[in-house]
Length: 336
Image (tube, rainbow, N blue to C red; front, side, top):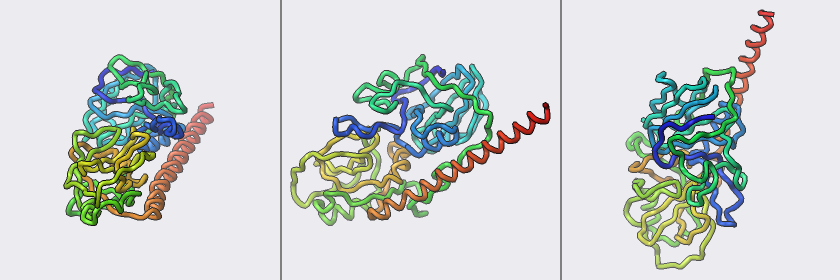
């Protein structure tokens, strides 16, 4: 079990989400950065959809009530265990009573505290994710508060001292030296792309869009020169998934994210590919992003390096844990 000692708004329990219910008006939810959660769960030997704590605001402080192995992924931040600095993306084991503090990130936006065995909250519609707008899932369907306790399958692994290279250090990005502070994302022209003027189409790819303060887990609102339609249109509502870029009447795009509406009616100009959604999840308010046009085939192929990165990590963890167990067995035999 863990106890939350300090937290700001909007920190929640999340897993990989609850697909399969959008036809009933229930969004997917789940972590914004699915890659960071998968890395944490692989490092800990968890199931891939085991739940974690998603951090959006800082500082965040918790106390381990039982010995637990854990990792913090997603961000580069000042992280301390009982005052001792520890590294993100690394496996650590806390003793009962020790306190973990995660400070504001130096890089990235959303951190993930992953615990060996996961977090035990009720499964609602196949998921432990918090759906804030529906007030269900996670811990009573709400953000975490100081004084909350979370049940865990408390596990202290007998192997520590290994970790993962962050995805940003391994996976190639579409970037140039001239604007390295801009986050570059690949996107495919969407269903309604042809409804926009040629000038708007070009502007979509050329503009360094700024993420506005009116952004959250539902979607990122982007600020830039408006995108104009060739003529006014009325569209029927359609299904919405994370990554779709809609354009409201004002002309400034909205990128739908983890808590996206299940249906919408604004024209769809593009869709950010799955392989780059984790980059968008780690973009802070005020950050500028650039969209780069890619084809459907290129978008599908872009998942290959991501999957290869996860596969290499699985192999590394399996090898490390096997070697550690072998060494432990040899020591036990020598003592006997």
